[in-house]
Length: 416
Ligand code: NIG
Ligand code: FE
Image (cartoon, rainbow, N blue to C red; front, side):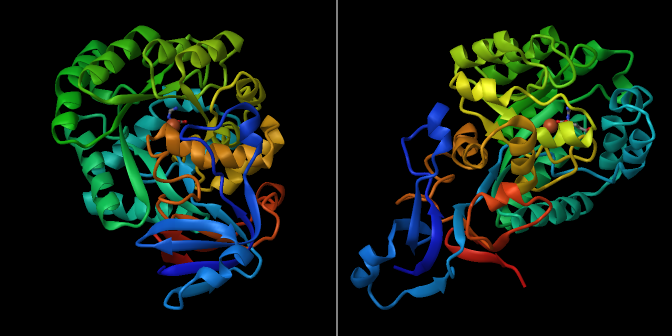
């Protein structure tokens, strides 16, 4: 043994089958009291009651005393836009004074404002900005995150974003999983030739992304006035044909059959789903698509139109929650904030929200065998939170509890 974390008041292992948790399984965290977590070579060797393993341990290991605190798997944030240039604080203020997200976008702001700022930024500037946000996420307990491109919208700028994501993954401690989102908006220069942009994505961007192995997933912002269902379908089919898996922004601002499209394409995830109804939920269930719910974007847009989380859980969907961290609709890197919103606005229990931000999120990124729970053989990514009841993470809001964060068995953040 290299390291033993002793005196874990509540060790939430989230142990279970080799698949995401559904239905009543999402209410269970498999908590051990007065427990210890044993780590060797960056992996978990054992999670057990302290009494059971006390005598068996050799003497050469390091010991960290959790002093009765809660220990959880590192959070897995399955939907982020951590990488972008500039800020949209000005638009945030305009929205507070009455303008809408859609009207700002229609006047050349919104995503296109971030595209201008991202194109103007150097790789180092983009990396610095993302590192700050990833650092904030780490300090609230996130150890794995998906990151999308989508603010370049030219072959060069999209590849630039994905290369920076790769570099941040290679150099940093948080595991980053890249998604190509060239179909996020139509760039300025293709405003009057939308078909030209779709062809550029299919014939040039996707093949380059794949040949440079810059992404695992492809994504699209499917909305009637942006990439409608027919166009989104063409782009996603091209991505599938090149071997990418799909995560898709669907039914965020309106209901247009996006959930059904994600189901028909066997997407890995369908994200947002604020306007998805029972028919869409049934389609996702039949196809085994994981819903990724993003309550931060509902909250920050001042909407009340949260997705139907309860219905999704009750229908047996393996629900995921994520931040959607981005400069427009969801400027938060905090999974605890998302847990609070899920509990207060979407009637999820804290345990359900925790399954949705750890093991289910890990499976949605094809990392379920490696992270998302504290079981023997898994990567030792875990967090000691400064509380004694795991429910405090949803109950107290606007508070960060992460006390010490571990990645591959190494402490990568300790609260000063
Ligand atoms: O997930 N919906 C599209 N994309 C983002 C928002 C992007 C932005 O406003 O910059 C989202 O909400
Ligand atoms: Fe998003």
